[in-house]
Image (tube, rainbow, N blue to C red; front, top):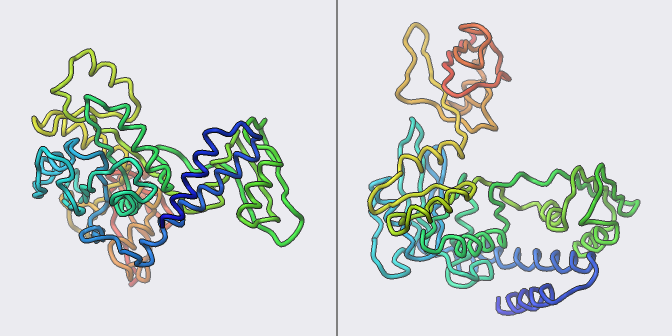
Length: 365
């Protein structure tokens, strides 16, 4: 472990001082990405384990992780939102294990994880950073809790830690194609002008991964980091909300400055200010779809919706969520709601549903 961390430090030092060619810097970034992956792998193989309380069973319809430096108010926020007990104190590192809580919001059960206070250097194995970030990777959304008195500094440091372990916040996967092949060398094409990557840089990065034959196509001005992310293939892309806490301790002028931050939500966990606003934003960023069931001859059940993700919301996904054997008996479905052209519309299992649609499944006789 110390050897890997020393290698990382050496490369970061070289990267900060280096004024060399773009392909050499791309090579350094590829080496760095591979070493960071080595740091993450021991915890998956049981070398030291994830630590007590970190292997939290996923439950509910979505998982949201609270990440932040010590003493920014994550535990208080969890208490106020879920009623789950999480020891709160004014000194640092109170939460030493991962504390789960569940909140029911708009019919969805959302698991909220209060992760232990993250520290600078977590991505390099310091403290319990590896366990925190490994758990964060399993979330559907991240809430970075920031202290209103020093939000920007902490924001940048935490983003750097999460980025270092392959978590990409509020970003889409790179729009480039990377396809390995048996022969023919590196074939690099682009539909736009490139300011970051050229053939030498691409070859240097691929060589670091022992890939000497591949077709690479760019559809935008991609960077070396984008190419490395696609080659690594283990990046997690997830929405992130910056909950700036303790706004009762700053001036209105300072609050107006913070209001210009993207993906930002001001709160005071202690005074319970704007917690509804935070939940609204969480709901928006999770982008869940509520589907109501309608048994034949009965009224729709508006109390207990079936929750689907925005990316898997066909009638087939709906059936699988209810019961794995339902598709075997499926004949067609009747749908009421915004996805239906008329009320009701008879549809097949490939039909895409919209939020708050009502569905009745007709089974084979």
